[in-house]
Length: 236
Length: 236
Image 1: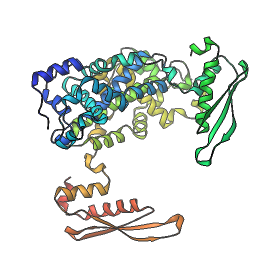
Image 2: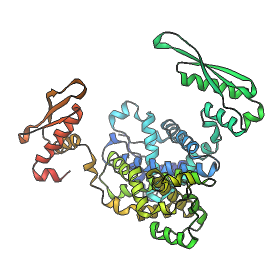
Image 3: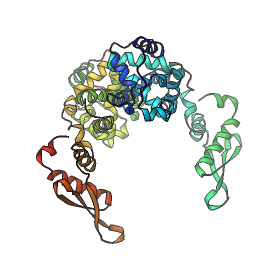
Image 4: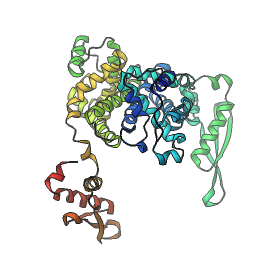
């Protein structure tokens, strides 16, 4: 088991990485203790941190995207709090270097495991919430992912191509696109579906090919979006 | 569309029901406006309120069940924030009487629809969060469901019977139960499985019968839990 870093070193690290100085350092130690290292491990804090993170990100997105509907907000949040995103942030902050792991986990490289890193990041946010309240935890969320949240695309672009195409046409009172299955090829276990997408008002037509009809429709719609007049491509 | 109640009436109601007086009453109006009534409806607030509710309940359970692991905390939370629970609380508070619905929803009894009531309750919590911050929203959660949270069973009882039986025996260093399929009867489309559960250290045995083997095992374990010595039934 890796011994704890010296107290002042850990204090510097949390201040630099999360903008937070723990009033109760024991909470920080618990958040950095993997289940494999025994006793006071971080799984309950992870439960709390997951909730704090979801709520903070919900609020930040709510404010940053005043015109996004709840579906778009949910999709934006899902990208921000995914295990992959959290593991990446956790690695950037060097959480792995401060983790306490049991011998077995240590040997198998547990301090680099994505899920372990993501869980510890959530646990640290839970610990900050317990330490200093919700606003402090939300400030830490801004500290560690504020720039990623600002860099998110407009909520609209996260909709799937078929939905986007339909909404663009509807907004202008135009007829909706027609999707037609034009061919199915390949063996039974590896069929390829070809679907055409037609937008009559613009006399446009594209074809998408994929292993499922649904996916082929989405591809055809994506291609068609690219062919729309520039002013329609850019506006919602 | 139902007209808004008089401002002071609404003010009294939110204070009585949520322990909150809105600094910005427009937020309360938006939270009570169903999508069918147009314009500034409550779906974005519902997104935010759902997050606030989850985080508040997570914290309340974290504090109330210091020995529950994260799995038990998740299960307890799921029962508290289920659509059914929220709709029930919403109905008790009379949220339906303050809802603004479109004519169509009104005619089909939308103000009694469980999902509409649950959504509006979440939206009101989101509105309180925006109005006065997280701690005010969490105080409202305590106001509307504090007693239900206190009345929750010990985290342990939410585990399934097989898990509970196994943990009780393990905690005392006793041999684990044995499950044996003793009979399968009935036609192919409606089979009945009989499974016995044996706990050798107590010379106890029970049989569960159900439409699946898994379910029969759980029933047998549930029966066996009832036969354990009283001191084992009560403690974790």
